[in-house]
Amino acid sequence: MKTISTAKSHGGVQGVYSHTSSVNNCDMTFAVFVPPQAKDKPCPVIWYLSGLTCTHANVMDKGEYRAAAAEHGIIIVCPDTSPRSSDGVDVPDEPDNWQFGCGAGFYLDASEAPFDTHYNMYSYVTAELPKLIATEFNVDMSRQSIFGHSMGGHGALTIALKNPDRFKSCSAFAPICNPSTADWSVGALEKYLGADKQAWRNYDAKSLIEDGANFSPILCDQGDGDNFLKMCDPQALIDVVKDTDIDLTSRNQEGYDHSYFFISSFMAEHIAWHAGKLN
Amino acid sequence: MKTISTAKSHGGVQGVYSHTSSVNNCDMTFAVFVPPQAKDKPCPVIWYLSGLTCTHANVMDKGEYRAAAAEHGIIIVCPDTSPRSSDGVDVPDEPDNWQFGCGAGFYLDASEAPFDTHYNMYSYVTAELPKLIATEFNVDMSRQSIFGHSMGGHGALTIALKNPDRFKSCSAFAPICNPSTADWSVGALEKYLGADKQAWRNYDAKSLIEDGANFSPILCDQGDGDNFLKMCDPQALIDVVKDTDIDLTSRNQEGYDHSYFFISSFMAEHIAWHAGKLN
Image (cartoon, rainbow over all chains, first blue to last red; front, side, top):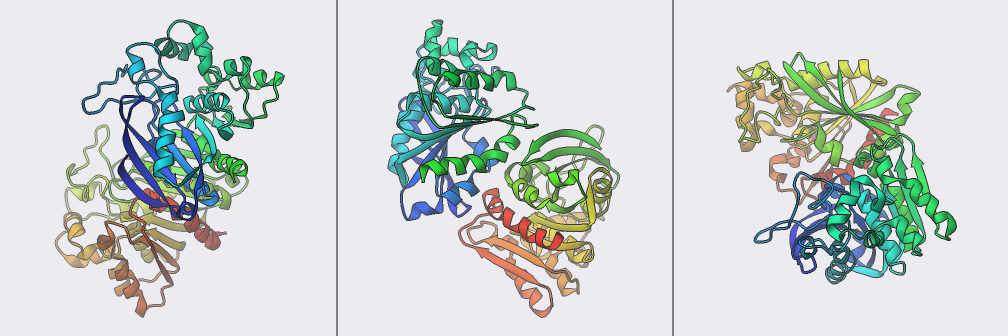
């Protein structure tokens, strides 16, 4: 692991690091906030997964998570949203398509060439990066939660549903709840996973729940001033949990849009909610 | 005034606006956060002045001021740091010099051609923009405070010292306390104000206090891990107020640098401190 930068913030340390990922076959950059409490004892960790077009830096700069993380003594890890080209590595991409390729990894493991060589964000976020974090930081891996925004909300939901024993809680800001049936996202799923729609269900919160996956508790916030409201489809999640025992709190936030101005407004509340399960 | 964008955030509205400035002879962009309390009553205002290379957007994105501003019911106005070229207006600049020209207006009124046509940030921030804000927002102009970072901390200090009756309080993050004698800044002051160093004293906190200016209370935070510590020279301010009745609280913040990770760490505390004087 290589340290790119560190800065003291809110009593802790906000760092940016990189390493060579063997599952993505490229260098990956990520951000970690370590609260002051980690000097004395292992701290729980919350994974924050970002949305389309973002890197690790967007939420680090604009998410306003450090005050709450320092208050509750929680490590926050912010991975990138996809593999990226770097020295000697050419990651296939469609630079003009913000819904596919770099910045749009969808937290899945691609099965289709040429994308399967690099686009393995599911394995990266659930296996390779946690192993590195457990080695390099003073983290209590028995206490993990996960959250994210938009495509990262999709990531948080699907990863929690597939790993129910690992996480204490899952939350999301404007998550994409049903990407396998939405016009805007099926193109990406087909390129990564092939034409068989059955494979797409494995990376779709609504479909996973229909197929029996179960995770509690889940907290979702969705602004009704969000231009991507239809794409996020919070009602799909509300409807599908009705026949389950999943503990879902889905809140409409009046007038909020899809931006970091929205995310940051509810960030402290989400972290406090997770802290109640982690501490 | 033209609205560029608005977004609901922390219960209030974060907006970005532009207008044609007659003192700067160009279009100027600025950010305003209006807290939810402004729906019901005029709210006090704090002016935030940013540092070298910044626009209105840096602190808006990374300053983490909205939660505290919403809590205390305070409008936050974030001007740009200089005039800028726009359609049909060519503002003189030195693009390779980050300490002069665009992004480096030093909150002064230039006296030297060709800069005097556009570089009048002192009049802009103290007269033209306040008039616009008073007209366009539900603000109580009898309750104003001012703060800023680095070059903007210099701006806040010098503007408060020259307008002691207008502001209830002044604070700064790593302010430049004595720019008229520092190697890195005298070049800019000479180009804007001419070779007569007496004129520079009018835009230098230490010199203004030596010449009898007076303002209280002042709160300053300075990180001792700041690469620009020498350039900021907090000791110059501590020393010069010793022979005055100025109420200065100057704090060393161990391990903090010059970045927004530092600013955001103490932002809520500064706003709460100002709120105690304003509300």
